[in-house]
Length: 224
Image 1 (spheres, rainbow, N blue to C red):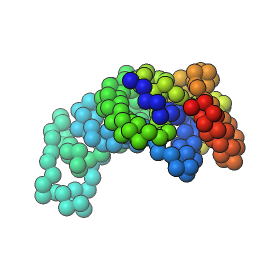
Image 2: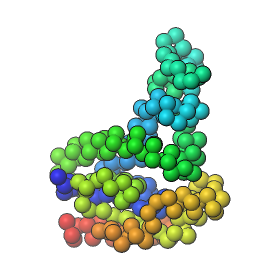
Image 3: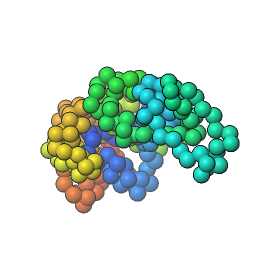
Image 4: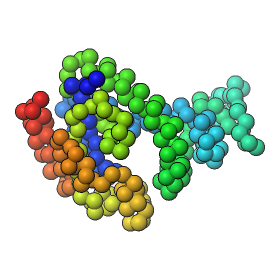
């Protein structure tokens, strides 16, 4: 089954997908955000994360401050006690540092999250498809995931690799080597560009990006 009103927005870390989606929202389009979905799914999987990766990757909320201490439930994990999902959350930064350095750990996390993320994207897509209007689905790892065969129109937000690295260094406070490693964990941006149905150039400033988005929307109107 293909969703004829859906356009995937993808790219690479640092390419500016979020900026493009914000500009599209400003134009009145609805966006399905895979990153937001993944954060929600991860928070629902706190207990599994603690079990798979260790209790050190779970942050305990202040139960007393939230008036939860009287009815908080605990689950033993080795010598530590882990609050249930309602009273704990995943330390994304700490877990990210683990999985970005270790492909085997990254594969474990993806196996846990991706089926749930895909199911939620599908659910939201069906709801928007029923409206019969153009909408966008922001999926950072669309090409890497190979789980989204139900989408057949893809726009890549493009910036050269050196620009991606510089942006990740600035945004995440990383060294050049660390930022380069994160960029290279994903499929090469030039390969993504070659596979795209549409390309939105974000190699310059915001004014240039706004113009690129306008050209993209005109191209969509002409083709769809």
